[in-house]
Length: 168
Image (cartoon, rainbow, N blue to C red; front, side):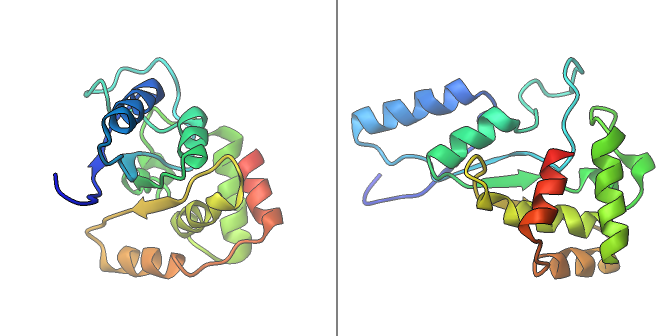
């Protein structure tokens, strides 16, 4: 490699991130500058076997690590397969309960689709010391959903609203 280069690496376990960072620093190699991993508003339920062993959700440990090292997270599958548009489509590995109820209630109060609120929450998450910049990576086959998701990038949330969503 010549000159400063940026690259992206997808590593599931936080200790592996630190291992790579240490090796890069020890050898004078460029460090990674962003992590892409599955992440969404809902928490993943533990103990569920996924089709791919390293396809796990970024959890709080990972978020704190990324925030500490100023590494953004590109959050793929952040719309949970359309599950925020239709909660019956949420993957089985997500805990739904109160956190989903709080999201749906706030979205209704604000006159927003829940998916738009998830995108806004991700965009504003770095306000908190234990959260990195989160870049929502979404796709859809529905033009109206795409327009809603793009508009969601401009939604502002207050610290109070963020605290409600974070603490649910």
